Image (cartoon, rainbow, N blue to C red; front, side, top):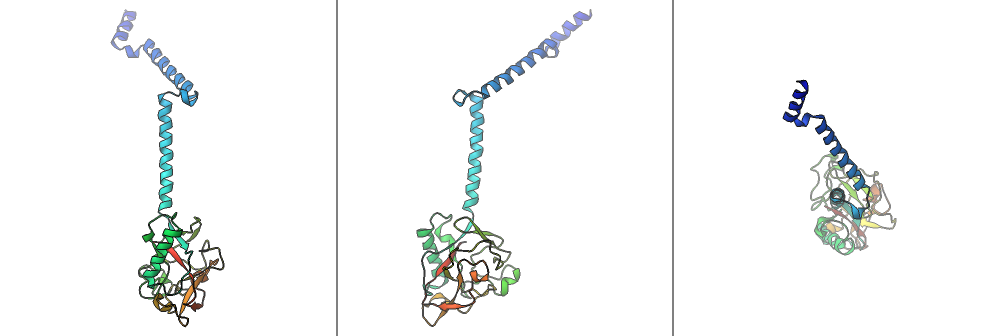
Length: 246
């Protein structure tokens, strides 16, 4: 009677039988064995599963490349103009135009449109870095200023120059790298070392007179002389510009 009940139970629930369980186990082993054998084959003989796995890996790599490219494309770059210019720049807006032309002609590989680039230059009215000395480390003390708060800036060679604070300026004397490694480079800025505007700004950057003066920064410097050399020069002399991606 017991043997009959066991047979009846197998017919009623065949998935519970020893025979079925052994069969299922054998199928699993067969599948796993086949999978590893196929995975060991050279690429031209790979089955569909291998191809799917390869496509998934390639997709992940493409996503990683896109992410890396996206990060680079959003970076904020600063370059030193290749051309030199007298103090008659056409005002701050004229200096911006010079930077945009420089980007188009000499720095086309940098990300962003040419219109994204502006001059790091102040005149006390049309562009101001700080109204009070060092902006008191607070935002809202500047006007039409092209540096953004809490942002890292790079040279064209991807070396970090500095990171701005919450006021959109950086601590002088703490540059990670100079704007330019060339000690002979000079660029107009109009900035005092505390980020306020100097009155030596070539008459708001429209004059190239020999008796009119402008403040400038030094190449190769990582201290405050990078934006203000503590002295001014005649606006009839020619100097470069610092151009930044806004």
